Length: 443
Ligand code: GDP
Image (cartoon, rainbow, N blue to C red):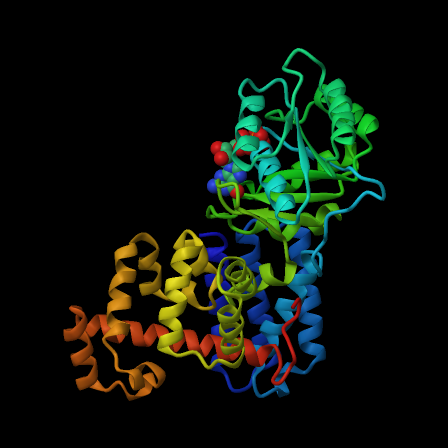
């Protein structure tokens, strides 16, 4: 999964700190050394790492973390905040033209996911009640026009094309006019990509830019390429004024380098993140949530939003409250499981839950949906009281649950352990967000 090794390494570092009642300056230095190595290994830009560590260290020493009762948590909190800043601080929204249509120009290397992202972005805009027009401006890659048409059909969005014999500049101009004539409030221009940046391509992109005066020039980069993605972003930015970045393939096992470096190196924020090949797999990028996720604190807010879009709003709100207050029971767990199964690929959702990536058994569920059936069977074999108060599950109760669910005591033990871990993570999470705070950041 994305960021897995970075997350594991960071959690190890914090775990060690958490284990100590008091931390000394040496402990902090040692921890920062390890964080530094973890970031470098995740392919984060060298200079970015250096600045980042310097900032965290300064804050940690300044706050006299050593005097805190929970030094580990204080340091995680500092790292969390700095990491959020590193990725832009707050969500960077799409620009909007004073007079529609708003023009979005998509650029990037071949294979980065430009055409796919064009379709996904249109889908996202449609969900916000907009009427996007897609313009097929990639006349070089043989199947690109067709690919865009297929995507357009899939979401019932119009695709403007003049075939592959007209220049992309002319296509863009005519497409924009078409949007004005037809009341489309957004146009998304898919442009050609090459394997490498070359002058002819840049010249063409500049001309399209001149003709359409885009409100956004979004660079699509493949997160899997790590620092290369950042270098590409920088080169593009030197030629064309980018306004933002779309990071794709975050569903793969990207190490984190691109996500963490792009803003710092280019000064341009990541606006969207793509996490799959399906048309719905694009989300607005939230630096704070991404930081939590990289730190293994889960991405509950995205999960909750996803849930709210798909699930009964009252139930979702209740779940959110419980998560905040760490009043989570096995009943909720089961409920969540059922809802989660309706939401999409289990492994992605699991990644969003705090602590899940740390749990071996949970990981197994990613590959095997049948495993979830077993988990459900175990929970269903518990009594009402046991579900609410798992701590009463002593050995004989566990044996009964195992027999009732057709599983083994070892499996039951494992599930209860996982559940406990999860509750602990939630507690930490909510205490980090501040006791009694009205809401989490971003809500
Ligand atoms: P383009 O050359 O930049 O237009 O790239 P495409 O849009 O054709 O995408 C290249 C390949 O990457 C296709 O097979 C896409 O399905 C795939 N792809 C794009 N975005 C994602 C993503 O977020 N996750 C995954 N797993 N695959 C993606």
